[in-house]
Length: 148
Image (cartoon, rainbow, N blue to C red; front, side):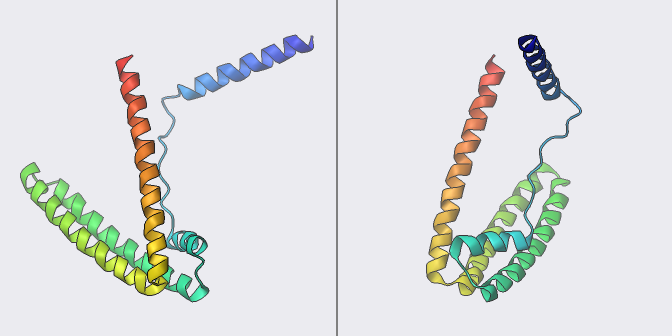
Protein backbone atom coordinates (compact mmCIF):
# COMPACT_ATOMS: atom_id res chain seq x y z
CA UNK A 1 0.00 0.00 0.00
CA UNK A 2 2.84 2.37 0.85
CA UNK A 3 4.54 1.63 -2.47
CA UNK A 4 1.35 2.37 -4.38
CA UNK A 5 0.91 5.64 -2.50
CA UNK A 6 4.49 6.69 -3.20
CA UNK A 7 4.17 5.78 -6.89
CA UNK A 8 0.94 7.77 -7.20
CA UNK A 9 2.50 10.73 -5.40
CA UNK A 10 5.58 10.66 -7.65
CA UNK A 11 3.38 10.40 -10.75
CA UNK A 12 1.23 13.32 -9.66
CA UNK A 13 4.33 15.39 -8.94
CA UNK A 14 5.86 14.59 -12.35
CA UNK A 15 2.65 15.49 -14.20
CA UNK A 16 2.21 18.77 -12.32
CA UNK A 17 5.80 19.82 -13.10
CA UNK A 18 5.44 19.02 -16.79
CA UNK A 19 2.16 20.93 -17.01
CA UNK A 20 3.70 23.99 -15.35
CA UNK A 21 6.68 23.88 -17.71
CA UNK A 22 4.32 23.99 -20.69
CA UNK A 23 2.22 26.86 -19.35
CA UNK A 24 2.06 29.52 -22.11
CA UNK A 25 0.61 32.13 -19.74
CA UNK A 26 3.71 32.10 -17.57
CA UNK A 27 5.43 35.47 -17.51
CA UNK A 28 8.99 35.50 -18.83
CA UNK A 29 11.76 35.97 -16.30
CA UNK A 30 12.96 39.51 -16.02
CA UNK A 31 16.29 40.54 -14.67
CA UNK A 32 15.87 42.48 -11.46
CA UNK A 33 17.95 45.64 -11.50
CA UNK A 34 19.60 46.23 -8.12
CA UNK A 35 19.05 49.53 -6.34
CA UNK A 36 21.95 51.93 -5.76
CA UNK A 37 22.02 50.80 -2.13
CA UNK A 38 22.23 47.13 -3.11
CA UNK A 39 25.01 47.83 -5.59
CA UNK A 40 26.91 49.83 -2.97
CA UNK A 41 26.45 47.04 -0.40
CA UNK A 42 27.85 44.47 -2.81
CA UNK A 43 30.90 46.62 -3.53
CA UNK A 44 31.42 47.35 0.18
CA UNK A 45 31.44 43.62 0.94
CA UNK A 46 33.67 42.82 -2.04
CA UNK A 47 36.26 45.50 -1.37
CA UNK A 48 35.84 45.96 2.41
CA UNK A 49 35.04 49.67 2.23
CA UNK A 50 34.10 51.96 5.13
CA UNK A 51 30.78 53.74 5.81
CA UNK A 52 31.91 57.08 4.35
CA UNK A 53 32.87 55.37 1.12
CA UNK A 54 29.55 53.52 1.12
CA UNK A 55 27.60 56.79 1.40
CA UNK A 56 29.58 58.26 -1.49
CA UNK A 57 28.98 55.10 -3.52
CA UNK A 58 25.21 55.31 -3.00
CA UNK A 59 25.20 58.90 -4.30
CA UNK A 60 27.48 57.88 -7.17
CA UNK A 61 25.16 55.04 -8.18
CA UNK A 62 22.06 57.25 -7.91
CA UNK A 63 23.65 59.77 -10.25
CA UNK A 64 24.68 56.96 -12.57
CA UNK A 65 21.11 55.62 -12.67
CA UNK A 66 19.73 59.08 -13.52
CA UNK A 67 22.19 59.42 -16.40
CA UNK A 68 21.33 55.95 -17.63
CA UNK A 69 17.60 56.70 -17.59
CA UNK A 70 18.15 59.86 -19.65
CA UNK A 71 20.33 58.02 -22.16
CA UNK A 72 17.85 55.18 -22.43
CA UNK A 73 15.02 57.60 -23.19
CA UNK A 74 17.16 59.17 -25.92
CA UNK A 75 17.88 55.77 -27.45
CA UNK A 76 14.20 54.87 -27.47
CA UNK A 77 13.47 58.07 -29.38
CA UNK A 78 16.11 57.23 -31.97
CA UNK A 79 14.68 53.74 -32.45
CA UNK A 80 11.54 55.32 -33.80
CA UNK A 81 13.55 57.03 -36.52
CA UNK A 82 14.53 55.34 -39.74
CA UNK A 83 17.16 52.62 -39.65
CA UNK A 84 19.90 54.66 -41.37
CA UNK A 85 19.75 57.56 -38.96
CA UNK A 86 19.35 55.17 -36.04
CA UNK A 87 22.69 53.52 -36.89
CA UNK A 88 24.50 56.88 -36.85
CA UNK A 89 22.76 57.79 -33.59
CA UNK A 90 23.75 54.45 -32.09
CA UNK A 91 27.42 55.00 -32.94
CA UNK A 92 27.25 58.49 -31.44
CA UNK A 93 25.55 57.07 -28.35
CA UNK A 94 28.21 54.36 -27.95
CA UNK A 95 31.00 56.95 -28.18
CA UNK A 96 29.29 59.11 -25.55
CA UNK A 97 28.82 56.08 -23.30
CA UNK A 98 32.52 55.22 -23.56
CA UNK A 99 33.44 58.76 -22.44
CA UNK A 100 30.87 58.57 -19.65
CA UNK A 101 32.25 55.21 -18.45
CA UNK A 102 35.77 56.64 -18.27
CA UNK A 103 34.52 59.60 -16.24
CA UNK A 104 32.54 57.29 -13.95
CA UNK A 105 35.55 55.04 -13.43
CA UNK A 106 37.67 58.07 -12.50
CA UNK A 107 35.02 59.23 -10.03
CA UNK A 108 34.72 55.74 -8.55
CA UNK A 109 38.50 55.55 -8.19
CA UNK A 110 38.43 58.81 -6.18
CA UNK A 111 35.89 57.23 -3.83
CA UNK A 112 37.43 53.80 -3.29
CA UNK A 113 41.13 54.33 -4.05
CA UNK A 114 43.50 53.03 -6.69
CA UNK A 115 44.23 49.57 -5.25
CA UNK A 116 40.56 48.84 -4.54
CA UNK A 117 39.75 50.03 -8.07
CA UNK A 118 42.19 47.49 -9.52
CA UNK A 119 40.55 44.77 -7.45
CA UNK A 120 37.12 45.97 -8.61
CA UNK A 121 38.22 45.83 -12.27
CA UNK A 122 39.45 42.25 -11.78
CA UNK A 123 36.13 41.28 -10.20
CA UNK A 124 34.24 42.91 -13.08
CA UNK A 125 36.33 41.05 -15.64
CA UNK A 126 35.66 37.78 -13.83
CA UNK A 127 31.90 38.42 -13.78
CA UNK A 128 31.96 39.38 -17.47
CA UNK A 129 33.79 36.15 -18.31
CA UNK A 130 31.24 34.06 -16.39
CA UNK A 131 28.39 35.94 -18.07
CA UNK A 132 29.82 35.25 -21.53
CA UNK A 133 30.23 31.57 -20.69
CA UNK A 134 26.62 31.32 -19.52
CA UNK A 135 25.44 33.13 -22.65
CA UNK A 136 27.40 30.76 -24.89
CA UNK A 137 25.90 27.75 -23.11
CA UNK A 138 22.46 29.26 -23.54
CA UNK A 139 23.06 29.84 -27.26
CA UNK A 140 24.27 26.27 -27.65
CA UNK A 141 21.14 24.93 -25.95
CA UNK A 142 18.90 27.04 -28.17
CA UNK A 143 20.70 26.00 -31.34
CA UNK A 144 20.47 22.34 -30.31
CA UNK A 145 16.73 22.70 -29.69
CA UNK A 146 16.15 24.26 -33.09
CA UNK A 147 18.05 21.43 -34.82
CA UNK A 148 15.80 18.76 -33.30
